[in-house]
Length: 151
Ligand code: SME
Image (cartoon, rainbow, N blue to C red; front, top):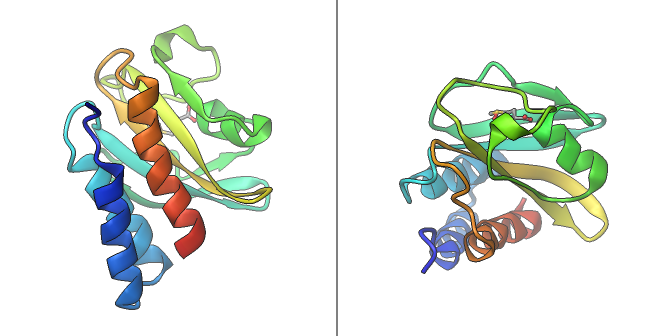
């Protein structure tokens, strides 16, 4: 069983949307609900694409200095440049990783896509090694897909 219950978070997002929650509130809600699942979800960052830059619009967990990431840089920028979600089992093993702190061992980036458009991404940091099997990643994708519709 995955740790994250994506359907529950999607229901919460839809509920907030019905009650007129705006973009900022929806992004904050997504970040806090995902992180509330607990380990392996240590910190959650919502980076949204503005031209050729990813801008940190909401997060829950550890603060990061990386509030603006150019497309193509780091794991986050690579996801946009390649159009592929990134599941990095061990951040020490990749050369393009932008470190936010010394505790993070792994990272999952799931793109928020509306048709052919990339709107942004959900970026999860974990203090555990290789904690996101495909069924766990699929739960994060449910949240990303809901955001693509609601934002
Ligand atoms: N590690 C990311 C940078 C963002 S922080 O994890 C919040 C990267 O390599 O793109």
